[in-house]
Amino acid sequence: MVSNTGSWMQRVAQDWLVLELTHDSGTALGITTGLQFLPLLAFSLWGGVVADRYAKRSILMITQAAMGVLALVLGVLALTGAVRLWQVYLLAFALGMVTVVDNPTRQAFAVEMVGRDAMANAIALNSAVFNLARIAGPAVAGLVIGFLGTPAAFLLNAASYGAVLIGLKLMRPEELHQAAKVPRARGQLREAMSYVRGQPVLWMPLVLIFFVSTFGMNFQVTTALMSRTVFHTSATAFGFASAVFALGALGGALLAARRSRPTLRLLIATSLAFSVFEMVTGVAPDYLTFLVALVPTGLAMLTFTTAANSSTQLKTTPDMRGRVMGLYMLVFLGGTPIGSPLAGWVAAEYGARMSMVAGGVISLVATIAVTAMLARRRGVRIRSYLRPAVLARLGA
Image 1 (cartoon, rainbow, N blue to C red):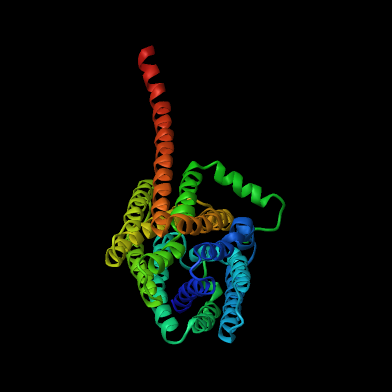
Image 2 (image 1 turned 120 degrees about the horizontal axis):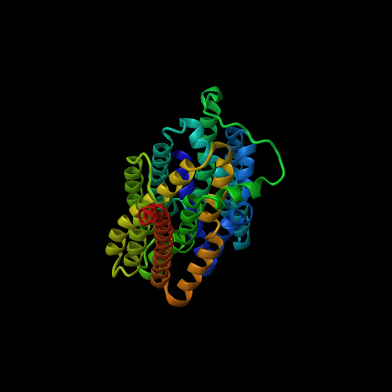
């Protein structure tokens, strides 16, 4: 909770720092976010291989320490006044490289902490904790930036990683539900791709997740631009808008925690709801309406992402989980280098409102397309099941 709060605080501070350095450039903001997620696009599958091969607790201690160091470097640069835009770009990219290994390892490690039976609930509750931090982080960031300055947010985040390292160190490894380590061998990435390709219940939702997350979930860019360029608010108000969005997301996480097994129907329904709410948020006439619309948007988004995460892990065998989650993180976050700069460019050319509305429209079209694919496949299954019975009756 402490570390997640610090991480969200840094994300808000990083966005604000880029806007300050570039005089409100949406393109620069999108590039920064894109660089942070570019390594996921290139190396996410390899991160999953690492997660399957080595002890996940040990991996997390290394990655979390590295993230703390990167936050410290950015904080010192900002504090001394030596920070330049290219340095922010470089540190964002370096953070993305560490995240390549950290993300699939953390996702798979949740199962090792609680076991398979409680996995769906653990994933949902983890999302709740994550979004509690998402509520506190932006709100604290707005106050910290307003009273102490942007560098303080980075330095406080660097210190927050100590909480994670202490927690990991205090764990008793013998009580973990550790999966067997996968020995080094050739073709392990191809094996994972073939595994997913052979299961429509995995690859069809992954297609939907890619489009919705890439084009619809660019709130790190769009919320900052809506707050600053449309409603002309301060850093504190921007942090409050992020916190309101997270409040809705927290509600979605808690609702998801009540479900033991997510269904494809839930995935489709929440994706449709998210698409519509995002479009409504983009056309909000004033700041208060914008805040109100962010709540159901966050709720639908978090319910959708939690259902997608749980469904993917529950339908995957333990020896494949790290690699499949590497693929999941690839489609979930790997498209950000495409989506974030595109959202920033659309905002720069046509306005922040159009950027948010366009994300909702693309998400809606993708949801309808995947729904049609699923309906067609299930229709084929029904026809193939009925045909022998019909032929038997004709023969009789």
